[in-house]
Image (cartoon, rainbow, N blue to C red; front, side):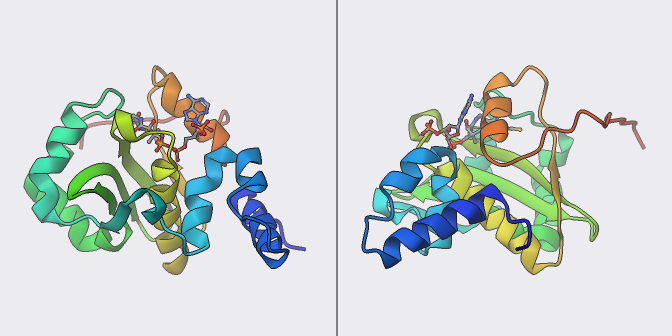
Length: 188
Ligand SMILES: CC(C)(COP(=O)(O)OP(=O)(O)OC[C@H]1O[C@@H](n2cnc3c(N)ncnc32)[C@H](O)[C@@H]1OP(=O)(O)O)[C@@H](O)C(=O)NCCC(=O)NCCS
């Protein structure tokens, strides 16, 4: 059998439990809670059990996004987040950028793109009072699905060493921590 990721393994287990008429969101999701958002999306259950809607991020969201990102520890804002730069990013990568919306208000974001070799995930962010409901994982799931559709096999992300919360989340959510790489940056 091909090597499948933890999300797919869990999804298959949930699908098996559906065939047995068990409640799909019971035992398996309790066992691996960090994947429940992705699993709900894969099973077509969406996040809508909680009234959360997922849609593509559009430039008209800009003012709401910049407020959300600016107020959120763990999200770094730079010149790359100016309106025209985000608009240019969306022109190329808009299919892989999503927001979660609750009652008309944006409560979660994920910017994702690819350079035809690898995918990159930026600004995964969920409002504090909406966390631990699977929204972050659902947004990641949508991004990964879109990268797969584009033929991209791997996605990278950058997280500050000091962001222990997010590091804990990624460790639990099926991402591999790379200790064999160093990131180098320079101004162009
Ligand atoms: C990271 C973030 C997007 C996760 O969003 P979320 O909607 O809470 O994530 P989910 O609900 O899909 O997954 C939560 C699960 O992840 C795991 N998890 C989350 N934080 C964790 C931590 N610090 N350590 C271990 N596991 C953690 C838990 O299993 C949790 O499930 P549980 O609450 O049932 O135990 C959110 O915490 C956030 O917006 N952080 C601030 C912004 C940020 O730093 N973003 C990353 C930039 S690189």
